[in-house]
Amino acid sequence: MTASLARPDSDATLDRVCEFLTTEIAPQAERLDRDPAALRDAFFQLGERNLLCLKTGSPRTFRQFQMQIARYSGALAFLQTQHQSGAAFVVNSENETLKREYLPQLASGQKTVGVGFSHLRRRDVPVRADRVTDGYEISGTVPWVTGWGTFAEFAIGAELPDGSAVFGLVPLAEIRGEIAISEPMALAAMTSTQTVAATLDRYLLADDKVLGEKPPGWIDRSSRKNILGHAYFALGCARAGLDAIARAGERRAGSARESPDRARERLDGQLREVEIEIFAADFKLADLVGYEARLELRARAIELAGRCAQAAIVATGGAANILTNPAQRIYREALVYSVSGQTPDVMAATLDRLSDRG
Image (cartoon, rainbow, N blue to C red; front, top):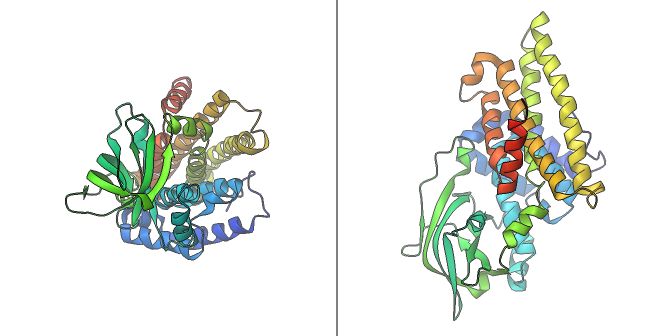
């Protein structure tokens, strides 16, 4: 495994994570991409190692974790980050009773939660809530909820009449007359994560399941503050692309190895440079790097993931067109990371970066 320059060698948690990923996850990455049951088992293996609540601990360790898990399995990275985000919502909740009940069991996966609130970014929010006597009555369709069959609940966000939003835990299950779940979506990548739409019809979010309220515009401010968060998945995907190029080169003899080796060396240098800059912007120089510069770094990470993935396809040759080929999986994962957590600003920065290459 090629070490990243950004990785602190002294972090025992990351050493444990990397050993698990290389020995248990990497050999079955293609299966995890297609098989929901296998992916579910891998998720709970993270729970057995108490790795499902890292987002509530050291931010730097969590960023490293995001990058490493995306390197070895995009599907597992995507599934577990939904739970990590849901767990963070519980940890930061105003509901002390709920926190006492859930916190001891979130890291191990004894309690599982997904998320369903990205729709709050939409101008016409599709999920609405009204205050009633013993909670909130919620109606509407949550268009994206990942983890059907794995997560028992998800943290929903619903807009209130004044433009603020209420958050709470809702069963990720069919409840006749109250919650309807769609068939899992036929996604181009990471289909095994079982992403569905959840439609609620006057569902009562009882007070004991309420996580709290957020003021109008909260999600936009949160996205600006955490604009580099999704960049780490793109960095891990880029590293996966370089791993695939290395494997392709090893299968070639003589001068045929020169092109893959040369491409990998050049891309590796570019990736290390972007890793260092992103970690510096997020931690060491956090107070000095402005929003526009962070946007540019996010766009660079997205672009580099795409370039490394395409280089892996080219280096692999015709076999990369087979759906189960590792290079093909990485190429599709790069697609996901190019739009994950996308805001209008991220879209503009990414398109500017891609269109200016010529």
